[in-house]
Amino acid sequence: MFSFDPYSPAVDADPFPFYKTLRDEYPCFWSKEANMWVLSRYADIVTALNDWQTYSSAKGNLMTELPNRAGATLGTTDPPRHDRLRGLVQHAFMKRNLESLVEPIKQIAKETAAPLADMKQFDFISEFSSKFTVRVLWAALGLPLGDEALVREKAVLMVQSDPTTKAKGPEHIAAYNWMQDYAAGVIAERRKNPKDDLISHFSMAEIDGDKLDEREVLLTTTTLIMAGVESLGGFMAMFAYNMADYHDARRQCVANPDLLADAIEESLRFNTSAQRFRRCLTKDTELHGQVMKEGDFVCLTYGSGNRDERQYPNPDVYDISRKPKGHLGFGGSVHACLGTTIARISVKAAMEAFHQVVPEYRRVQEQLPWLPSSTFRSPMRLELARG
Image 1 (tube, helix red, strand yellow):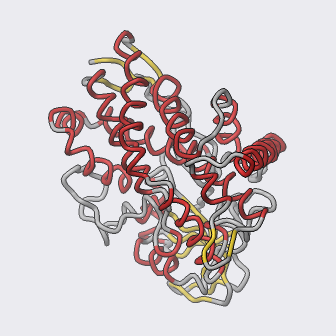
Image 2 (tube, rainbow, N blue to C red; image 1 turned 180 degrees about the vertical axis):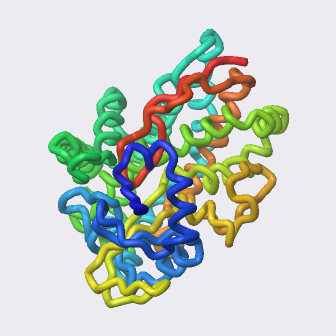
């Protein structure tokens, strides 16, 4: 009897065989372990993303949601409230001209990569990607220096789940509460002393007299910190994981860094860190002979849609010349990730600097320790060796 448990370490280690079975045999599958329906085909996922009236985000979008978050963030609201929030936050992004961050990001990448020149073997995450991502996040959001390691620790805990209880554990909730307290302190300070950073801009963002309320500012700040640390960090780790395993692709990118942009898009398709998000049905819906009931939760498996043969030929082949239009690495429709531009800029700059210092490398571990998260998939460590 087939089962699919998104909390399982086996799914964390290699979800793709499970996804293929789901797509081919059970395209609308009830997972008793997750207590929700699972959609795995690209076309069905895109339909659900576009039909926000039926597949609502208002009860939370994480597979295991954090308390009191639903209904107050970009990812946990539907239009028209979502449109209002997105407009205000996007206004802040526009005021904090991201182009002004390009050169600082390149400099951060070079400085972070430089110490690797003396290392024959290292953990890509602790020695490079986590250091880089927190520095970029601090530059963009204007967070106070000195708290980087602790903030990253709490952000990584926030996205985890307990695979046994299939819920957030006390340590995950405590990390979330800590992050809210931390964000509240930063917001209060920025209101007293505004700067040219994202937190200053969206805490005071205004369109036609409309502003974010206190809860919206707090939870948006908390979500941006979580996304900046974990989503960007996971994205970088998965890209390096692909580059380490696919030597020809890496050598092409080292020889011609302009190819990194295409390689990034293929990595977002092939091995996105954003694997699964949930929705809640607002009405009974029939799909593939199954009747999903109003109030049921639905898991949208982005990682499966990106490997759907119906959408992408030879989907299990990592091909940096593919140009995978419409991939789900950043979600889609009204809930497409707002940070796509800075994410692409950051990863390209980081990997270009990394390749200048470490042009040849391979993965040391056969079995990777994967983040215990029902939503995201990325390694906790990625040991690389030169050559």
